[in-house]
Structures are given as C-alpha cells and as structure tokens.
Image (cartoon, rainbow, N blue to C red; front, side, top):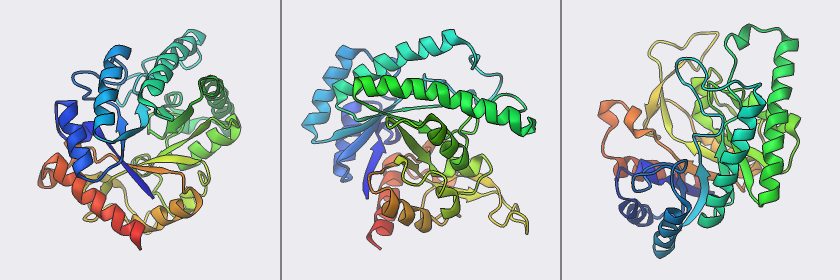
Length: 299
C-alpha cells in the first residue's frame, strides 16, 4: 500500500518547508493542490511549476497527482457555477485540462484529479428515466475528457463530491462503466461518501472495485445520536483524526489493498474543519494519520 500526502495539508506557507516536512515524515509521494508559494494548481504558471519541480527533486519526492478545483468546479452552497448542458463550458474545460496536462508533464505526475458535472437541483426527486439520462450525459462528457487525457498520456481521476453527479461509490461506478474509457479512473474519497449519505462499507466498495487509482483518506466522527435501527452507522458528523474516530477503516482499506493494489492512498485530513480538540498541529495530525494507516497496511 503506497501512501501520499497533500502538501497543502502540512500547514506551511512556503512550499520548501512543506516538502521538507513530507520527506521527514517518510513520504516518497506527494499530491499538489494549493499553497504552492502563493499559487494553486489552477493558477500557477508553467515557469513557476518548473522551479517547484526542481525543489521536489531535491527532496527525493515524486508527484502522484495534480488536483484541480477548476474542472467542473463544485458549488457547496448556492447555485452551480456553470450550466452542465452548455457546450461552451465543456470547450472551456478542455482548455483548462490542456493546461493541467502541461503541468502534469512538468511535475512528471501520472494523474490529474477532477470533478464530474454538478448535481442538478432536485435531482434525487427526478424519475428513474430522467436520472438515467443525466448519468449517461455526465459519462459522455467525462469520456470526452478521458479521450483528451489519452492523447496527452495521462490518467484522469474523478473524485466523488456531494454536489456532483458522482457523489458516492455507486454513482462513481455508474460513471466509470457508462464512460467505458481506459484513461478514466476513480479517486475515491472514502468518507465523502458518508457525507453524501452512503456509509462506506466493503459492499459500497464493490461499485468501484478494480477502478480505484487513488483515494483520499481521513477520519470522521458520527453525528451524535444519529444511529437508528434503519441507519445503524448514523450520519456523518465531522472530519477527525483517523484511529480516534468513529469509522472502522480496516475492512475497506484491506479490500482496496487486495483488489486495487495500484491505488495511491493520499492523506487529506481537512485540518481546518477538525474539531478544536483535534487541532494538534498539521504535521502532528499527518504523522498520526500516517502511523495509523500504516498499522492497518501491516496487519
């Protein structure tokens, strides 16, 4: 099992300090998203990226993914930022992706992480026929982007987020099967599924099995008094430090290790969202998370 970390989760404003901390914590792989000396993956220039790549090499690290917020950007509150059926939007995303593939080449990163199309308002109340049509439309757009990734020699990874058409493992599985393209795989944020109402069990993993190229791993608390006979796992409460949380990580982690051995396990603790009692310092939270997940991998 191979572990990675988001450099922007290490708590440093300077990229060189984040790289130093990642190397000292024993990581060989990193993921890039924000805090790139004042930039994000979506704003950094190609020239500046080349300078940062030199620093990465000097620390003996390599980049697993460039992770974008700009491709079909999520709106976690308020209306969507774009029209899913606007061809102009999809052409714009092609241009954004072309730049991301340029960055992936500079950083020698095999993966580019993106989102699928946004979830229409009231989607869960649509008829099954309407839902099916929208799932297939989403897949057709993501297949187009996967074809672009193939031309550029990269792998496109779709992450599950509650406001998107791939909010949980079941919907990720539908997307991958309907798109049916070898350059479109899954970045499964395991506990995002719980946020979207799907508790991440081994049975949920069956929907994405053998398509998971990367995961985002973290801990989570259950919402107080939310467990019922109908919903024995309860509702998602908040992110937490793994190993001292309410989620049993071992069954799903073991299943991924068995069926998706290629998957990179990226630690992404969402530090700023943690309860105050869990804010022990970013590096300490990453250290504890890594030790916990490594102990699972060693069993």
